[in-house]
Length: 360
Image (cartoon, rainbow, N blue to C red):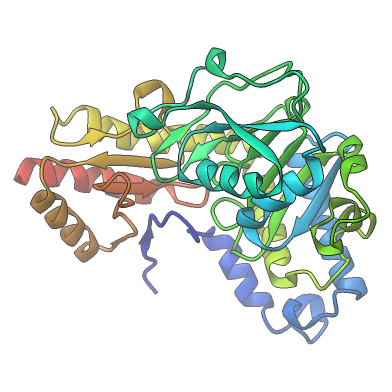
């Protein structure tokens, strides 16, 4: 079977090796005579998968012992609510750095819970850049500061981060977690939907300082309480067992590949190919993001006219490329090149872009 050249923004490409292993184990996981999705989440087999996944993630991201790892459901969108429910203290504020659609949605949900305010914004430039750290205005007694580390729609990414913050830093890393090393000591809480870099949709990873669990009030609904999930090892209710299993396989794949540092090198190489095709096109392609804010995960660009864009997308689809249409907020095109997108697929796309430019 010929694999699609998949550049979807999410759910996105999975490593071929992971899919093949899952296919092999689909009906008979480790001689059990059952598939993972058939196991009880209280079974020895799934508890081993859950523990193995936790251990792999802790090792790959160098997560210290004073941080809890949770595997939850509801995607990053539920975290827009759970974060302020658990962390936004009464009488306090939360600051949100506005860098795109997802930070807008996060702020909107937080404002339903308490006093959440913008701490900086690049909306006036249609989110072409990440605000300078010096522009961030957050109160010293704020409950936390929230950022979105990579912005899939606008193709921007944080490349330097607020450090030595007076308040806990909360980060939505849904679209670039595991793509590069991170310094966990800078963060109070990280959350990430799996469906871009970690696995299929269905499981959300939350990594948080254990001290912050003290803020989770007993009055909160149990399913929305970090403390409840932490005390039960992410097994308070029936978890998305198949998604956790796939997460384990992706983490094993990343470990075998050489870890996060190796993935970062590969991601830089892939992104350079596409940005080179844009920058050498003499204006035929125009990148949306400013140079210093360019994403290594989502390359966004426009062409000279709507007709040319439509022709590009049509020919790309005819050539086997999937998911290249840009979001309506930006228009044009978007190539999402997450960890699992092979280098050779990106090379083919860069070649197609160069050839299309020469012919048009």
